[in-house]
Each structure stands twice: as C-alpha cells, then as structure tokens.
Length: 87
Image 1 (cartoon, rainbow, N blue to C red):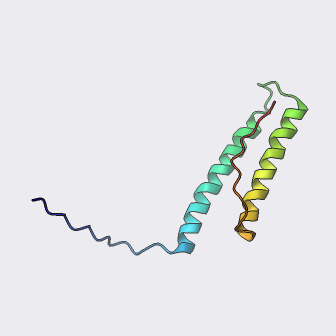
Image 2: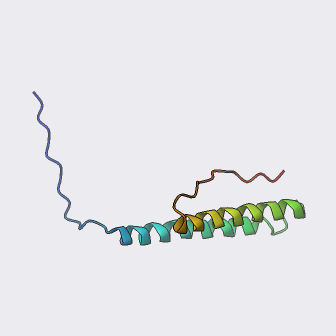
C-alpha cells in the first residue's frame, strides 16, 4: 500500500493580489509593447502593403486596446478573440 507524501511547505510568503497584478501587468505589458515594435518594423520598406491594410491593422489594434481597457471598468464586457485580417 502506497502512502502519500506530504506536500512541501513553501517558505515564500503568499503573493498578494496587488503584487500579482503588478508582476503580470509588467510582464504582459512589456510583451505587448515588444510586439507593437515588431508591427512597426513592418513599415521599414521591406514589405509591400496598402494604406487600407495599414489602417485595418491599426484599427484592429485600437479596438483590442479599447476592449481590454473597458474590462477594468465594465467587468461584464465580453472578451473578443477576433484575429486581425488584412484582406
């Protein structure tokens, strides 16, 4: 008969919700900013695109930012998983 091993107790203090928000917000915000830099680099002349594609791309980004921000003030806002389509 196998016996269960007791769970290890962590010596780390439990992370508060505010500290977790700060940690995750910093990490996720920095990832978004890095990805936006990469989007900006698409305009460096190595790619072909139309003005309509650029407008569509940034309209979608603005909508996603607005929807994410609205979630802080309207928690019942539905989460959209729409992808950017440049066609």
